[in-house]
Length: 220
Image 1 (spheres, rainbow, N blue to C red):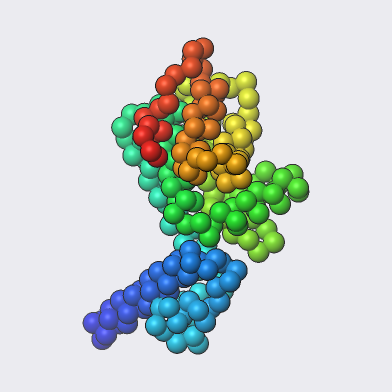
Image 2: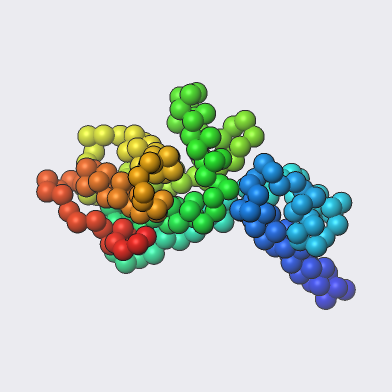
C-alpha cells in the first residue's frame, strides 16, 4: 500500500513540475497575460481539467515560479556571507542575482514594474513584498531581502546609517525600472551593474569611493 501511495505522490510531483515548466516557457514566449490555463496544460501534455488538482489559479502558478526566484537570490546572499563578504558585497550579489532572473525571465519585468508604480501611487512601502502587490499582480520580494542586508550593514558600521535602510532599499530596487526604460545602448544586466556600482559607493561608510565589489565584476 505504501508503495502505491509513493508512486502516486511521485506522479503528482512530476505532473506539478511539468505544469510549472510549461507555464514558465509560455510566459517567456507569449507573456503572462496572453497565456491561458488551457495553454499551460496543453504544454504540459495534461488534461485541462486536472489543472485545479495542483493550482487554484494561473496567478498561483506564477507565485510558485517567483518563489523559486527569491530562493535563488537568497542563495546568492548566503554564498556571499559564507565567503565572509561585507554587507556591500553581499548586497551586490543579491542585486545581480535579481537582475539575472529578470533578464532571463522577461515576463516578470512588466509585472515587476507595474507593481512598483502602484506601490508608489498608494505610498505603500511593502508593495513589492513576498506576498506580492495588490490588485492581482504578484512580484518577488527582492526589496525585503535588500533592506535586511542594509540593516545588518548599518549595525556593523559598514553602511552609512544617516539614511533609513528602507529608503536605500527602495532606491536600489528602482534601478531595475531605470535600466528597463534606459535609452542607452547597454544590455539590461550591464546597465544594472553600472548603476548599482554608483549607488553602492554612495552608501559606503568609507570616505573614498571603492572599485565595484566582487559581485559586480565582469559581465554580470
